[in-house]
Image 1 (cartoon, one colour):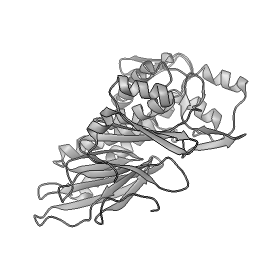
Image 2: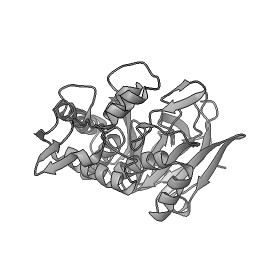
Image 3: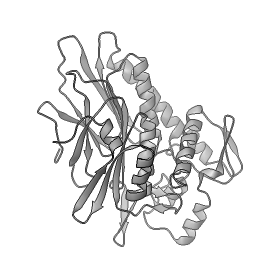
Length: 349
């Protein structure tokens, strides 16, 4: 694809979602019976992709794919906001003052969201579903346009983690809040798949779900799994960095794929819950590397919301490996911290 950076003649592009391009070697084995297995499919309105090194003692792709798709089916049943029978949408339909028994993964992610909300002083929030719908980005289709001040004020009364309460195995609401797990559900799915692969004796793999990914081990030739970080633009594919990953999750959040423009202003689907509006700063994308794909997913969103200065300070304070891409008059300016450089194995040449 145009503008992509490939590391040597043996490399090829295998996937492109969410600002990350997976680079993988050819399928040839090493003469010991090992092979590189691949499969992919639709999920969560996008795609998933799995690659793993198969040894004589590890399962074949059909068995592995069945396990992966069982996980993705369960994640969709629990977290989807596009099906009325999901646990999330059944909770969203409840009136104020009601509780609902929830599966453990939802309660776990609510707790993660609560921590991220607290650490960002309310900027990150899982209850932004009404805002997404109001601005035209949610499952309730409407025109993408700036809402009136009155409509925004009404919806903001139903946003905020402080309106949620966990009581045993129940999740309760004191106002008619609605949950949206899009900022962390895919990362959770990746971690769950990675744990399943490890449990099946697969220790060299790259698992990707809607752009969130985790890689471990080495490819057939002993080289690391490599991915390209894309320049945040929607007209062509240009790689800014190529990094090697072993044992980490990677997530990129950006404002360049899902947005609309009105009166010369760009409005993206990334919201600051404190204002009820999309972020309007110059930070175009953030990539985070973290041992947990779930946390990489959530933290990349959190840093994007906070912006080029406050987000950078947050990453530095919490020792988060982050790669910032900032819009400038001449194009894009990149900024990485020491935590990021410690975790990556290669730079683009």
